[in-house]
Amino acid sequence: LTPELLASGEWRDAEFAEYNVEAEAETARGGRKHVLRRTADRVKDVLVGMGFQEMEGPHADADFWINDCLFMPQDHPARTHWDRFALDVDPMESIPDELIDRVESAHRDGWGEDGDGYHSPWSEDFAREVALRGHTTSLSMRYLSGIAGAELEPPQRYFSVEKVYRNDTLDPTHLLEFFQIEGWVMAEDLSVRDLMGTFEEFYRQFGITDIKFKPHYNPYTEPSFELFGEHPETGEEIEIGNSGVFREEVTGPLGVECDVMAWGLALERLAMLTTGAEDIRDLHGTLADIDFLRNAEVSY
Figure 1 (cartoon, rainbow, N blue to C red):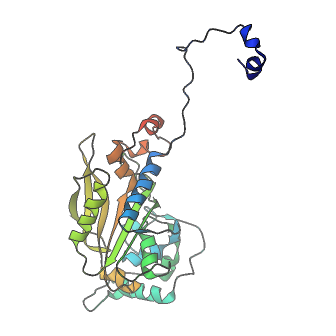
Figure 2 (figure 1 turned 90 degrees about the vertical axis):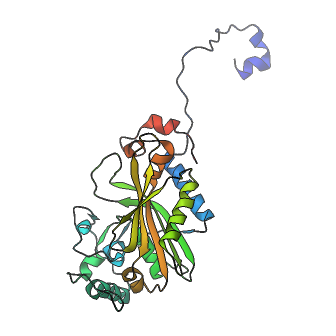
């Protein structure tokens, strides 16, 4: 049946094939937003609603911003070629010399009257080398130092939801690249209770109310703790983030004089809790489960 047949009236004399409404046909699928993108957008909405501003910055950065500013010793195993993706490019020159001097001093001698450094080798050349960031805390260091142009009169809240790169072994909860929910709050007299309350409010927005906390050690935060959530399908407790209050050795060289609590949460593992996915590789990568992505329910 065509517009011409209808307009001329010839349809009255035309012969048409019988229309079979039960005949098999190819499935037509419309486009939809990827599960991770949908989760990331929801995370941004929640954090903006909690008063946070978004950070942005380079995926490839100087080791200075990625690790040295975090009071990570240069001989730490996580800074070897086994874990980081170093790039064969020129060293980064655009780092303030006075900031490098303060960070080096913290590593060698500690910070403050009772501080004590690592007394281990420290090289400015290594600090200027460029690698793919292993965490988006490099953005936090850039913003807290003032080099990114952030407003630093407390209180302040900043976040990012961006990709990071680690030379991990692939398994149901680890990938070589994944998305990290970075965040920090700068204010006077912060405590672990403030940090725990922030997490409880954040995850409650996703219907998750059974977050558990476990004390942990980080070179850059004290006190520190990891976060765990119960998988809705397996009942297994999976790690979903790491957090703490930045040490004086981190904030002091950056010129920050008040408390800063910070965290790095895994976007993919949040999506696992909200969608029931049991393997992070089902969400993205070469082994992604297309049927799961097509049929996953919207879950806020």
